[in-house]
Picture (cartoon, rainbow, N blue to C red):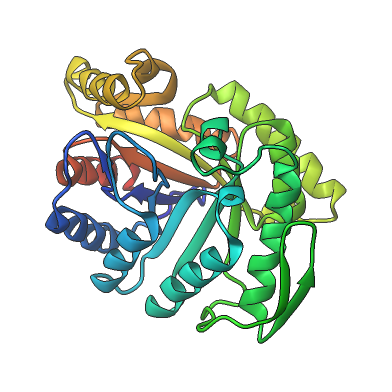
Amino acid sequence: MTSPRRISYGVALPHRSTEPIAPEVVATVARRAEELGFRDVWVTENTVDPNFSFDPFVVLTYAAAVTRSIRLAVAVVVLPVRHPIHVAHQVASLDWLSNGRALLGVGLGRPPHYADFAVPMERRVARFTESLRVLRELWAGPAVTLEGEFYRLQGVTLGVRPVQRPVPVWLGGDHFNAIRRAARLGDGWISGGGGGTKAEFAHQVTILKESLAAAGRDPDQFPISKRLFVAIDEDRSRARAMLETWFGTVYRDAAKAETHGIYGGVEEVREQIEAFAAAGATHLLLNPVTRYEEQLERVADVVRR
């Protein structure tokens, strides 16, 4: 599904909720998103979470089994707290089983992630960049020998390698250092967290494009993605209430409905997402937070031309 601005659209798969999510809801949304022409379905990684939250690779593999063409993506895996051999194997398996539809988003995460998994925050950027190298070398194969600061591989071969060579890896994060790192090392950039104003996003895109040019990369060929939490209802107060309930329960901050979400009727939401497209996004990840099947249809109405 693509607008005249050549924006591609993804949609969040039901995967994290204040209430348990039935398997048939996941399957229904995945199939319908494909029928409606969305480019990809997305999940997040929230392993330690008081909310109901699926493992990203398990739920994406489930979605792969009930679809044929839609891409399957996660944003973001907190790469430094995972062993890159395990991540490489999970992504390769998903890509193989889906016939080349995997897309991996990775990021540094936040301090609690490191404490939960007993991984030191010191040198986390170096660990992150070395992990990226391990992923890509293992996917290329066949046997990898690598002497790094954190990982030492001696003739390591994955049991399965991906269909895509290479699997696209998009880097997430809104800090200027993260944006510059995405320009150097990523196959795309994901603006983190769904929040921030259009002006802030436009400034980030400027930094990204300058960094891409400095790295000798073509900004016009580099995906720029923005996650937008959405609630669509012609009754604007009802739409806002959906987001307030979500942010109030999941993030303990209902006020984020205003700063991290967009809401209203179809035309109002369309104007808001087009503003992010005008600010430089080439891919928009639209993330309903409840009433998944109904909201998917409304999201499709928003981006349909």
